[in-house]
Length: 303
View 1 (cartoon, rainbow, N blue to C red):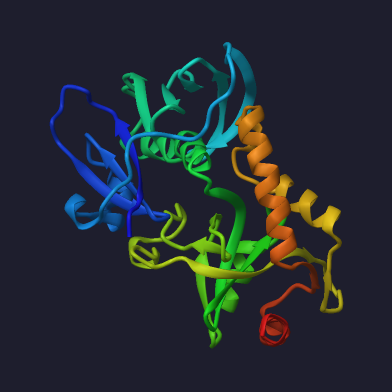
View 2 (tube, one colour):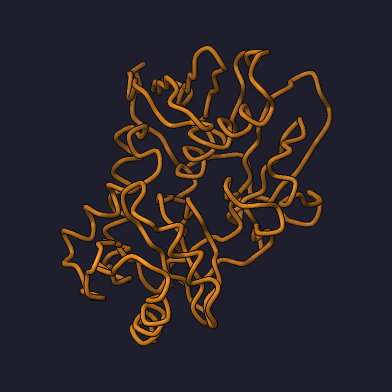
């Protein structure tokens, strides 16, 4: 299988090459990325596509797409994204800035990071907006979601911050036939046959042995919008098309950074997803005692 590739240039003077495989994509970096150690591969193992991208906008001009505060690497940081003739300029002052190119699959650091910032923080920023934008250009869109495998299919849980999606996935992952696949970010890909979850994406809150490196993409069977309320009855209801699209767009990662062509592709992607994959709303009460019932309901629904 021929894979997409993304170049990451952090040290142009270096001839070193470190390769990692995430989301059916080869990441080739000129500097070691410690956070991706679990995903390291030998470059020669995987044939890679040529260095071109389909994303383009007629006569692009510098345009500020986003400027504000965003949660990055454990705290709120200033973030801006500017569309340029070369791609997306991502700035996180005073830490660093990156250019995410759209004419070729490359992310370049434009100036050295703040010496007072640890390598772990720098890598978390690099693997945040810059990488998510580059993956989106490659038609891999992400949701703020947790995920589990039930039998041979995947189920995503989306919800507001603090709604319990990570906790629910962890609890369900302790029950057969479930397995936790994602804790915070779920990357989705699509071909002419189906939508699939890519479990081989770095989950920042999970330890190395909990990462799903080299795991193949898994058919996406359902997306579940969770609504945890004390003393609530357990109810699973399918959402209509419009409400489903709104939920997916609202919980998409880095969507506020997209330019018009990428925003149109993102909306088309999510619209098609809701046609092929059911989106539900799950109401459930607090407490782990109900997870067996939730597992049974979901298993029956996707089968």
